[in-house]
Amino acid sequence: MLPTQNRLRRREDFATAVRRGRRAGRPYLVVHLRSGATDPHAPGESAPPTRAGFVVSKAVGGAVVRNKVKRRLRHLMRDRVAQLPPGSLVVVRALPGAGDADHAQLARDLDAALQRLLGGGAR
Image 1 (cartoon, rainbow, N blue to C red):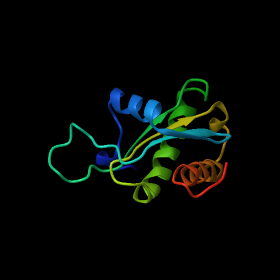
Image 2: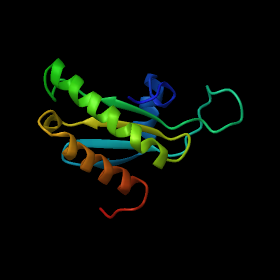
Image 3: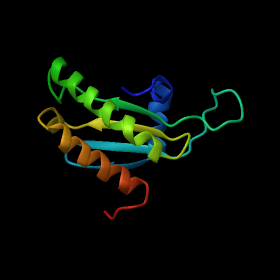
């Protein structure tokens, strides 16, 4: 499970990541990354933690399928949060095929998208 301090919850934060961040698309998902964004709501001088949020629409499938996809994505992001710069906002949007994809396929797409966004991969 993704720790509470690493979860993206507010609508404004989702909007910031999607509108002002970079985007990388893969067959099963699209990842939006706003690197090192400072959080004006966080008290203190320390760098805020990296936070991730997930968008899984009804186009992916029914409620059971959507929740399964969200659980898989949260589990995958838990291991990858440390790779991202502190204060980053990440939004992972599942595409309609994600409901039929297995865990390994989602992991490959997530890794490829994050690698591209972090400057390690070509288009």
